[in-house]
Image (cartoon, rainbow, N blue to C red; front, top):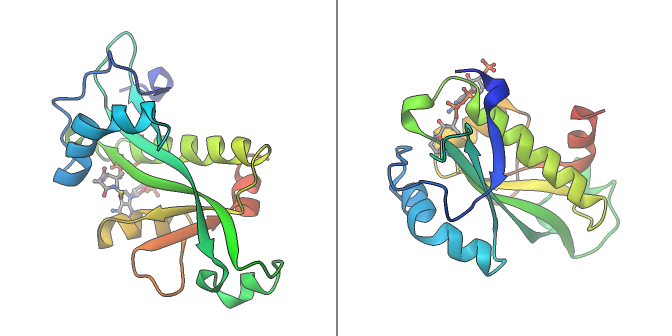
Length: 170
Ligand SMILES: CC(C)(COP(=O)(O)OP(=O)(O)OC[C@H]1O[C@@H](n2cnc3c(N)ncnc32)[C@H](O)[C@@H]1OP(=O)(O)O)[C@@H](O)C(=O)NCCC(=O)NCCS
């Protein structure tokens, strides 16, 4: 498959998602039953990876505004931050690739698109990091492969500082 023909678009009604299988029933159910509603109600921005002219969803991710407690940030980074009790972040709540297409760089393509969108949005509405909720140990490994750091007091939440993300797109 040619990566240059992959497109990441805001999820639309026309996007076919009933056959999407990623190995996580919760992530599959979300795309099929909840994603459009969340998107319409502005609870989450949902983005689909498609290969035009086909409408089949090959992968997806969600982004939302969120906050973390300052004491969740590891001490070496916290020392460099103003002492506010809560810090603004962008939440990458879900990210998944169709099972039959894993290992072709699609997960990385989606993650980079999500980080780039987050960086651009942070220029208008600040967020000091992108936070992810890893659904299991393998998902946490995937994010750590790209430099995400576990938050304090959590085994499943990881973050990547926006300053680090900015260096990826210099
Ligand atoms: C995790 C997931 C998104 C990876 O997608 P993918 O398309 O197979 O990954 P890619 O082909 O883009 O891999 C990119 C890089 O990440 C690495 N990687 C992929 N999955 C990994 C994992 N579970 N742990 C560690 N590294 C991983 C690859 O080896 C590759 O490394 P390289 O560039 O150095 O060769 C996909 O397996 C998936 O959808 N899993 C189920 C849902 C899920 O767990 N989502 C994440 C939490 S919400």
